Length: 207
Image 1: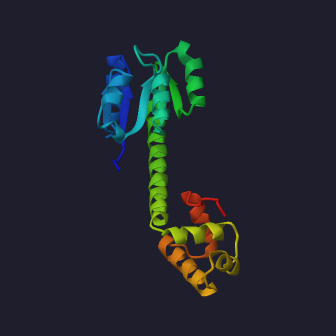
Image 2: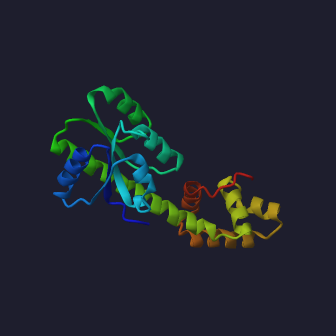
């Protein structure tokens, strides 16, 4: 997974792009600038982006349209919109659609810095959560079909004897499955196993 610490600035105004870049590079923040939404989407390295500073109105694809495109791609990226006075209603609507914040032009340097740093921190938190979820899902993906069947029954609240009867196996075998499930998923207890299975989306609900 890329580091995603880069700020992408998408604005058709070259002066704004350069201004934002200079402000952030003074803080040792890596910045990439794009003259259009399409230029950003066409960049093969755009997944390294941790925060998007995005103009609302641009020729071609607008800022909110790019936001919707990213949403359709299931790409959750913190977005800071730059708006002119007349674009505030559009920016408010973008906030309702998931944008982190917006700044009205002309903006103060510290306002921009504070919001970008907040967005990057949010991006880091999102990536940490994604990494934890990926690790968790990987633990459940190695389960055998029978282990998954036992897991579903445990999550459904069935007791060891009930599971043994339904699967026509011994109680001891069910207990061995329980121990294996805890070991493979790194769960310290059955309660934690059920909780982890729910978080990982590893419950079929068929039992």
